[in-house]
Length: 354
Image (cartoon, rainbow, N blue to C red):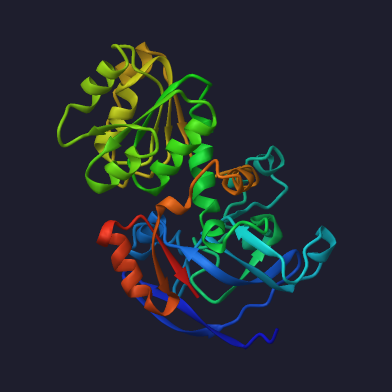
C-alpha cells in the first residue's frame, strides 16, 4: 500500500472555527503504529472541544485535529510494535488514553488517571483531546490504545468500542449486582449503551429518564421510561420501586437536574456513577448523601473495558448498531457536526468515513 505524504483532516483553528484541509501524514515512533482510519464517531466531548469549553487543556494549542472514537487498519509499524504481535493489515479499534505506564495509577491499572497526564515527553497521550486524533485519513497511535477486532466486527462497531467501554465502566463503577434495579439518566448513545451493559451484568430492571424520540428509542431496550416533561422524576421512580429507591443510578446527561435526581432516587446504601461533565456548578443534596450513606463515583473515560466490550459486541450481547444513525464522508464534516449537535433526524451516533 502506498501512503501519500498528505491527507484530508479536520483542522480546528479556534472555538467553532474548523475546516477540512490537507495536512501531513504523521510517522509512527517507538511503540506506535500508523492506522488508516476506516470509521470515526463524533462524541459529545468533541462538541465541548470545538466550542471552546476546555481552553488550554483540550486542545493545548491550535491548529488541532481531534477525534477519539475510531477503528481502522494498521498500515505502518513503528519500532517495537511488531514485537507485541502487531502487523500491517491488522484491524483494530481505538481508545483515547495512553498512560505513561510507570506512575502509581498506571501500574495499578487506572491509566485513565495517569499522574503524568499531558507530559508527551515521557509518553503520555490522549488522542483527540490534546494528541492528534481520528478526524483524518490516518492517525498515529500508541499500541497501548488499540485493541484487535474480530473478523465479524464491522468498522462502524469498532468505532463505538470506546463509547461502549465508557458505558460499561460507568455501570461497573455503580456496582451493579444481579437482580438490581438501575436508573439511567440520559437516553443518548451512552445512556442506551449503559442500559444494555446493565442488563448484561445482571440488572433485573432498568429505568431510563429522558424525553422525546431518544427516550422512545431507549425504551425499546427493555427499559421502563420516565419522561421528565410529564412527571416528577424522583416521585415516579420511588413509586416504581415501592418507595425504596433504585440500587444504583448512572448519570450520562450531566445537567444540574439529573445530577441531583441521580442522588435522590437511590436507596439507602445505594451507589451513583457520574459519567458526564457538568459545565456549571451543582448543589448536591448532602443530607441524602450523608443520611443514606451513599457511594458516589466519578467516571473518566474507561480503564480496561475495551477488551471486555469487544467480545460482548461480537456476540450480540450489546447492540451498538442501534445507536448509529448517520454516516458522512469526512469531507462533509460541517454537515455531520450540525446533524449531531442539532440532533437532526433523531441523530445519536454520527459516523465519519475518511
